[in-house]
Image 1 (spheres, rainbow, N blue to C red):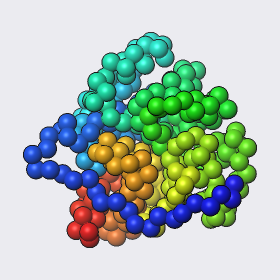
Image 2: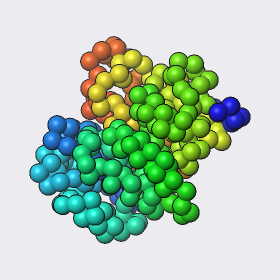
Image 3: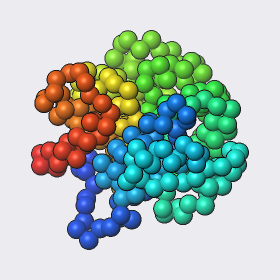
Length: 296
C-alpha cells in the first residue's frame, strides 16, 4: 500500500431523463440472490434500483423463492433458475446483452455449495457486476483463483461493496494489512483491493470510501439511523441502477453512496435516528435525487 491516488470531491450529474424515454432507455438491472431465510434482501435491492430510476429490474432465483420475492416487490419481473450452476448461467446467458445491463449479485444469497461456482463465472463474464454480501464472501473463498479471474481482457466491470468485515476477509486473502481504524488506512486499503481485482471498491461505514485504485471519494452524507438490516441491499440496487443508466463504474458508485446517505438524512430529519427500515430508506431515494438535481 502507500501508492498515491487523487481525491475526487465533485460528483457527476444525475443521468438525464429525456421526455421521450421509455423503460428500455433507463437500463435493466438483474438482481441475483435470495435464500430461504433471506427472501427480503434481493427484493429490497430490486425496489431500490427501481426507485433510483432503472427502467426494468429482474429478480433471478429458484422458483420457490422467486414467487415470494415478487410478492415483496411486485414492480420487478422474474427470471427462474433451476438445477446446477451451469443451468443458472444458461438462463443469464440467454438474456439479450442489451436487456441485462448490470447484475446486482449477492443480497441474501447465502453460502451454499453452488454459490462459489456461480460467483466464479459471473466475475469473469462480460456483464457489469455489483457484488455484495455473500457474493463477496464467496469471492474471498476463491482466494487467489478469484483474483486471477479478473486478469482476462474484455471483462465486464466490477463494483465491490464490502462492509468492514467483508473487506477484512478479502484483505486477508490478498495479504493486505488492514486494521479498519485509521481513516487513511481505509483509503489505501480500498485502493489496493481495487487494484488487485481491477474493480471499484466501496468500503462502507461512516464516511464510506469509494476507490478505483487511481482516485477516491469520501462520502459525507448519512447518519446512524442507517445502521439497519437491508441498508446495504438498498445501496447495491442504487449503484446498479446508476451504472445501468450510463454512469461510469466510479461515478455510479460515488453518486450512489452520496444519494444513499442523503436518503437516510432526509428520513432522520423527520423521524430521528432510530426505527429506519430498509424499505423506508429506498422510498426516500426519489426525493434525494430531486434535491440533488435542484442544487445543480
